[in-house]
Picture (cartoon, helix red, strand yellow):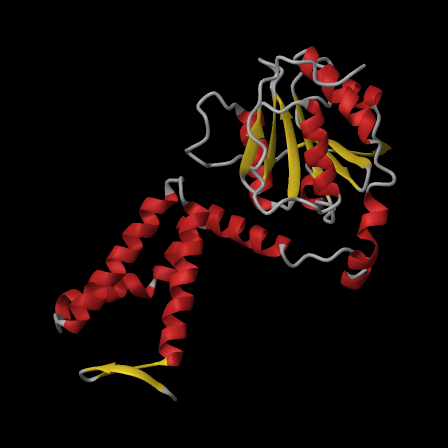
Amino acid sequence: MMLLFSIGFLEVTWVDLADVTLVAVLLYQVYKLIRGSLAVNIFLGIIALYLIYLLVRALEMELLATILGQFMGVGVLAMIILFQPEIRKFLLVLGRTTEFNREGWFGSISNWRSKYHEDFDVPQLMEALKTLKATRTGALIVFSRETELKFYLETGDKLDADVSKRLMLSIFNKNSPLHDGAVIIHKGRIKAARCVLPVSENDHLPAHFGLRHRSAIGMSEVTDTLVIAVSEETGRLILARNGKFLRGLKLRQVEQKLLEYLHNEEPERWDEMREESEAEPEIKA
């Protein structure tokens, strides 16, 4: 192997450099995944314990090295038990990048633009959002571009109906048995209602965010979806995408973001649109 440089008796090759770099990237990604949750303290503790174990072995402290070695021997099993929610979240994030629709990858590239948006009545949805905001009716709506989200569909009641203002208002009506949960929209159709979504464990979210808002952000963290949540207390809405959220948007801005998502034309920086006042009229009747 090609020698990169040497420090005394230690010889460093290009393979060693690549190995260390990949491990560093992996550890950083794991840290980003669990950052803001209680698991980060456990993760840092395990890293510190492992570094102490390496130091003890290098100093040839046999007794302490043997004791710590026993912990390291069951370390993988212990990490699986301790980090079960985080491992599941990591696999979901990894899986969403490798999912292909039933028609095949090449088919999705060639005709996704013409398939998704044609059957989606966006004006009907925007009118429904306008009424939901005006009446302060809580709502949670998930938009999926490629994945049908079968796991989450199974948690609710399947509908498979066209998007319409009347149906959306009926679902989220406070007296409706379907209002408590999320609506999932895939390929222009309401696939299910009353669906249960994962709740974000991010400790840096605003304190006034309730379960509905945290569910919207949590869903966007583990799936490639765009989620809209309407507050029942204030009537304001947020858009969640990739674990980030936008709030204080006018309905025309919400429509713009939705169309960008459906057409896969999202900007590199999803937070380009600044928060704006909602005092002005948002959409004409």
